[in-house]
Image 1 (tube, helix red, strand yellow):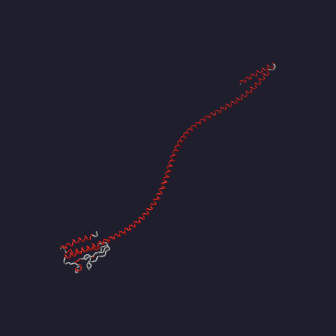
Image 2 (cartoon, rainbow, N blue to C red):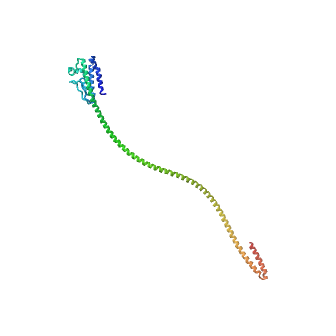
Image 3 (cartoon, helix red, strand yellow):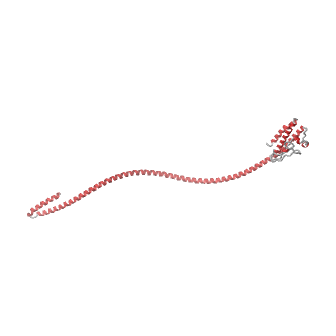
Length: 311
């Protein structure tokens, strides 16, 4: 765009100002404006490059490198410098031979201007390529420097990222080790939990059996209590019967003692009766004299014997 813009401006100036001079329609009133445009064009040509030396001409040499950003000011094409914005006719009055312009002939003037413009355009075109190459080289150098700095920054960032990655890898290994340990611990805990659950189920089963046994024992205890109450009642009844039996035994014992005493008395009486009978029998064998007395005694003794027998 920088290369073709001056050519476009030069072409426009040529058709607007030079062609009317060639055709004889040149208006001297527009001379100042035309020269001012040429001066502006010279400023643009001389200072438009990036850091290049400004190109100078008779019409616009004063503004050569002022806007070029580091370029050298353009030199004037005449022996005397012509400032920017000055009237070319006033500046070259009395110096037409040095400037190479003949203001008396419009066609010659137009031809000279056209030739000068063509030369300036060619010089500008020739200067644009080195300026563009220099600017491109400068831009390339700047971009290369920036790329180098960016590469260094990228290398530093890469080194930092590499360190971070290595640290993260170490942390990942540690985390994996922790995960393995936690997994093993979790498996052990799960096994313990399963064992605890199995033990809990067995405990619940045993508790159910114990509850069943407790119910049975409670039922048996109730039956035992009933049996105990019955046994206590029977014991009380038997105790009462025992007391009655003891009383009967005591009574019978007393009666036996009484009967024994009576038996002893009766036995003694029977013994006396037997003795008396024997005495009586002996007395029967005595003389008849004493038979009556013995009979009386015998009768009395026999009566006692009978009484003792029936007693």
